[in-house]
Image 1: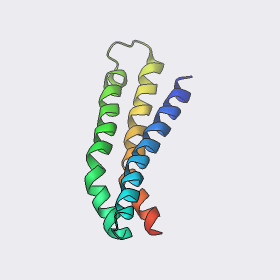
Image 2: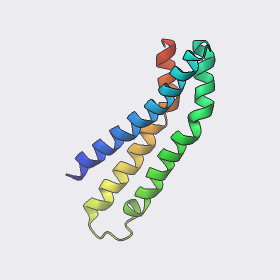
Image 3: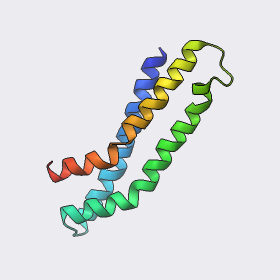
Image 4: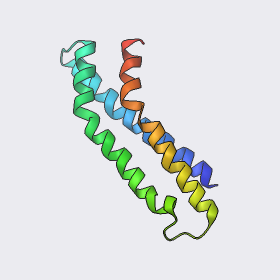
Amino acid sequence: MMAYIGIIMLGGIAVSNAIILIDRINQLRQSGLNKKDSIITAGSQRIRPILMTSLTTIFALLPLTIGIGGKCVTQISDGARSYWWVGYINNPNPDSDPLRLLGF
């Protein structure tokens, strides 16, 4: 059951970060910037909210990962698994979404 909750959590984080970035790219495109400049500008403007979301989730999972408050081994392993997947899901996100928009 914990694995399903983790999958839903990770999917939600990845999708919300992509929406934040792509929404800003579309706003800049509508204001008249070309595709490449709007991607670069949106990436530099929206990296802070994306990193804040990622780091907040990672720090929230840290007590579960190192076993503070939970004595069950499965909770610790689920926390560790979710902890590393959050890092994996969010690291390529700011790079891969703009590259997909450029057509790579």
